[in-house]
Length: 330
Image (cartoon, rainbow, N blue to C red):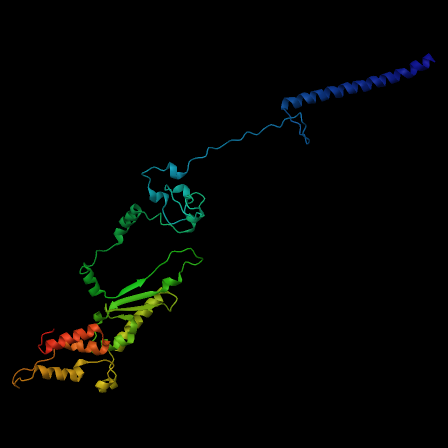
């Protein structure tokens, strides 16, 4: 029995030693690998946070916030370089304490320029400061011509350019840049500059109607039918040209008009002229020159009939009549 046991135990012992040697070799290899990992500083990825472990905090690099440009701007800063052209309001670039907005309370201060939508809504002209305008004018001088001679005064300019053109341009915040009111064109001129005779002037004034101001002698034509300003300007010139030429036209039936057909009272074509001249020439010899009715008397009679009877016209007519009869007024 002892022999059998010794015979069996010997192979088993050899096999156990062989397994133990493999385990020692594998253990040695794992130790070597762990040492290699420690040398390379290999970090273990943990999907589950453990209370004992502390996560490394990331260092935040805080950037220093610089002051607005309005506070860093020098007093002698070139404003044309800061604000070269038209643009929306920028509060950090404007060194002015600007305020705008509605306040609900009585003694409340209006909102400042920062985060103020009201200042950004409206168009501004901060780029058109006096120094910038002066610089632009200096740059435009090379394209300008000398002022024409003969137009030094306002009277000379009115003499050579009697027509005034008036139009308007609007700057607003709308989807379209074209304002409907900008198409309106107004022209003004004095009727006396047209050099019309008596017949043409009377016909001209009847054609224009209420557009003529008798107190100032200025004719005003307003055109707004066309969609564009240039079209209304051309139409106004056409109207003025048509009125001028139509006034100088004499129809055949106008030559046969009598005193009863006249639209207004004409002193030269009425019996008042004959009667007044008869009074002035009473008792004069036929060889002596005949006297004519004074122009002031004729004007007062025409004004009395054409404008109607009022206190001023009656007083004027009384003074001229007493002067015609050489009577002292009381």
